[in-house]
Image (cartoon, rainbow, N blue to C red):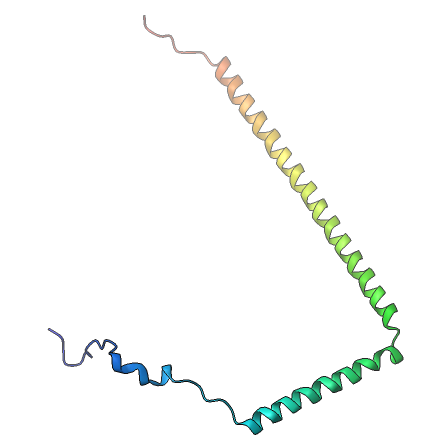
Length: 121
């Protein structure tokens, strides 16, 4: 009952091990690997030489201590803000609890004062 337009289900066969998916990737040529290694090494050496020039141009320790002080101050302000936000949340929860208690008390008071229907004996 399959139509001719529909393709039949193809299950993998044991001979599919030579498909392109299972082939090992070839390693790049040695000259290409050596060239990439030299370029990476040269980039690392140039970066190190540039970093060695930093102490001459900038006061590195002053920059580092200023950055750490700013970071600590920012963390301190963030924690203070979180603490203040938690205080606001606690106040809002206390207000909601108080309103719930007042409403519950009023409902019980109205029920207590409401005339009860007499039960037949």
